[in-house]
Amino acid sequence: MAVTDAQNPVLGETTCGSLLHQLQKIWDEVGESDEERDKMLLQLEQECLDVYKRKVDQAAKSRAHLLQALADAKSELSRLLSALGEKNFVVVPDKTTGTIKEQLAAIAPVLDQLWKQKDERLKEFSDVQSQIQKICAEIAGNLKLSEQGGTPTVDEADLSLKKLDEFHAQLQELQKEKSDRLHKVLDFVSTVHDLCAVLGMDFFSTITEVHPSLNDSVGVQSKSISNDTLSRLAKTVLALKEDKKQRLLKLQELASQLIDLWNLMDTPAEERSLFDHVTCNISSSVDEVTVPGALALDLIEQAEVEVERLDQLKASRMKEIALKRQAELEEIYAKVHIEIDSDAAREKIMVLIDSGNVEPSELLTDMDNQIENAKEEALSRKDILDKVEKWMSACEEESWLEDYNRDENRYNSSRGAHLNLKRAEKARILVNKIPGLVESLVAKTRAWEEDRGMSFTYDGVPLLAMLDEYAMLRQDREEEKRRMRDQKKFHEQLNTEQEAMFGSRPSPSPGRASLGTKKVVGPRANGGANGTPSRRLSMSAHQNGVKSIAKDGKRDTPRPVAPVNYVAISKEDAASHVSGTDTIPASP
Image 1 (cartoon, rainbow, N blue to C red):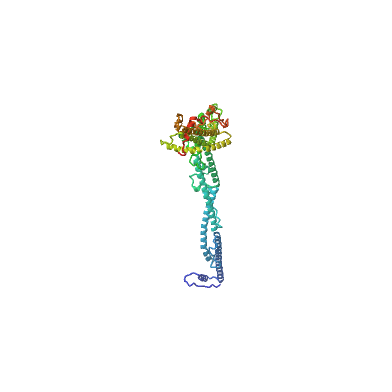
Image 2: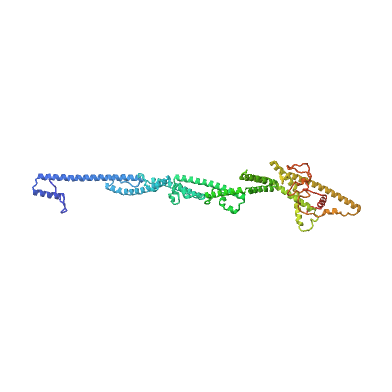
């Protein structure tokens, strides 16, 4: 077998040809046969072929590995692009473009960038999901789970920005819900604090019964915001508000009792001031009571003890209190001129208290009812009594005017004469209104009696009878005035005839001269000659032989004689009245 010897131009370099040349030299020296030489050369060629074959296999395997790596890189690239949602992030090199290593070299930086982006995206997803998981645990009431903060499972198949935005939106909604719940919790806690302060209760123990995290030592962000906590807080607030309402009603009831008892027993202001903190809320609404301790249990108990003490004191002072009530009742009736048997009423009260057959509270309640009824009756009589007062005042002025008209010196320039002139002018105006006033008073009195079904009395006398008698007296007075005027005309005519017969006017007799004497100007004690009623009208005059007026307002005769205490006109008074009235000018 021939071997080609290829010399390497580089001196001293070992090559396959140089080694084969050395081998031939050795064979020549040894004397190897051609057969052996061919055999050994065939063996060398086979060994060389085996070496080349191994190298080719290794190269094929390396190429296969590179192709697999390229395929894996492309697959990873596609997976990352899909997971990150970066479809148009980079253009993957074509398979036929460049060598395999060039293609791998082109993909490697893209993969590195995507892997880095994936790690960052995973961290963002983990953070968002951790916050979502924590808030959900807080809303569910699992504070321990939220504090442990276990790592959430992130779906690496979808790390797109769209998915991340969805998680962020969910987180924002949860954060808003947490904020709203936290505000509700804080509002409830504040309300519980205020209510506990007003009710005098321990806020710490009350709020920790709802949830331990609600006390002041726990931070705001660590407080429970679960549905159960909110529900229990709402129930606690409702219970405290109801308790506050009931306590306020109880305190107001006690305050009313205290004030009634104080008024009943004339308790001094100094003693009342000790319970100002109780009575100050007697008319307050539930929302208006905000002072700490205003509705504490010890305060209510203190008020209850005081009411009980005053009740016991009231029982011992029952007679004094009852007589005070009776005096108040009598005063009301006296102001509206209603006569009652005070002595009999007081005696009856003493008998009831001494017998013990009636409860003190029932007796006082009955007397309070009588006082209320008396006030109602007084109110119903007010309008009529006001007119009676005006009528009596007008009658007094009428009486004064009669006396004033009798005074012959009324126009003298004496001290106070101008004041009397002014009063006389006003009195004339007032006297002219008396008939209309009496007519209105009669109409109102009759309407009152028809409505009430009873007679309207004034100091025990039927008012209509008084008015009827006043009208009769006034009519009699007018008739008397006419008679006196006629008599005066007769005397004047007689004097004229005597003067004509005897030639001179006779001097007035002492009796006639006395008609012009001055009389006292002012109101009379029991009425005037003109029938003026007195301030305290009475029917005592009927005991003097005059026909009486019945209590029901009916007269015994159609035209009764005027009672003595209302009018008493003698012949001398009548004469003086005539002489006084004849000289009255048209105006003062």
